[in-house]
Image (cartoon, rainbow, N blue to C red; front, top):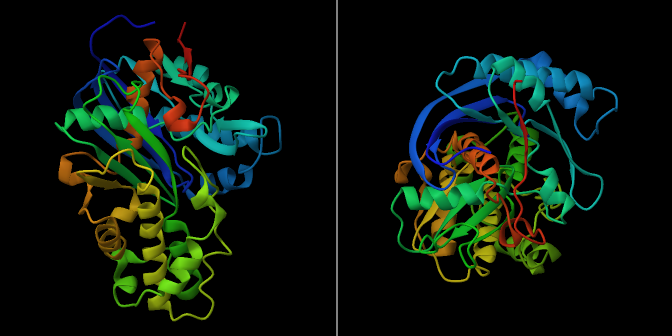
Amino acid sequence: MLKGGAIWALGTMSGTSLDGVDAAMVLTDGERILDFGPAAFRPYSPAEQAVLRRALGRWPGEDGVQEAAEVVETAHAELLSRFTGAGIVGFHGQTLAHEPKGRGTHQAGDGALLSRALGLPVVWDFRSADVAMGGQGAPLAPFFHFACARHIGAEQPLAILNLGGVGNVTWIDPRQPAPESHGALLAFDTGPANAPLNDLMLARSGQPLDPGGETGLKGAVDEARIAAFLAHPFFHRMPPKSLDRNEFHAALDMGNLPTEDAAATLAAAAAAAVARGAEHFPVPISRLLVTGGGRHNARIMQELSTRLRVTAEPIEMAGLDGDMLEAQAFAFLAVRVARGLPTSGPATTGVAALVGGGKVSRPD
């Protein structure tokens, strides 16, 4: 266990987009953010992406998993070796399979090997303990989001919304003494976000997204489709809750709707899902900070502001880095694990009790 006081921690994140590895440094004592340090990105090559893609959905010992782990380990070692001054590393690894109510969770990459390569203690396998105790194993960023809210000086409840393929939100009351305090946090998946829109644009135009929301801004929203979408059983479940990327595939079929109208409708669906989720917030929010790729889509941001009746702001407006937030989160969580502090709880992952996930490997 680490002793008290602040330490520079280096965190990593390799997401489901398989584009590469983010790494960022945070000066923290596991409770407060004292400073942000340098950050960097190491892309996966097309060949590396192909290896990782072939291993998706597979578990330890299955075909292709060892090759995928070697890609992950090599990429992380190359990137992290560029940094200096870190006292500990938070290594998320690459999620290949995640079945919290089934076989568990599997992130490729050996933290012990990385520890020896870097000569630093490495915290890894963050999700397994939460899943073993009945939690979803995700999201894990909310405890860091609480620290972010404190860091920016928030005094009233606010929300940090991450719009990736799926949307997830953290409601935060920064007036509470700690993230594990009763009433400090509520976190859950809100519903589909960029994934249906990206799939539509790829199928209709050959481009993988609607850049800036330009196509959606030209279209009209089909509110009847939005109403049908909101009738999905997912929206009647109480949080915490999570969902798979393709769970809403049938519910968001745009049929022969013109592309501009379909893009506008899918952008509105992402926002409508968040607005429905906001009905679960213990008290209304004073601010909505948006991270993830969705913050770059002007139509989604417009729809969020209208449907939640609070201005949706890119998280950069609060002085935070929307591209490196998840890597920073695992730097912060690494210090919490090393200090024996919880990293998730009933209000964030649905786990039965507060739990501190993660293994700690040391170079010796």
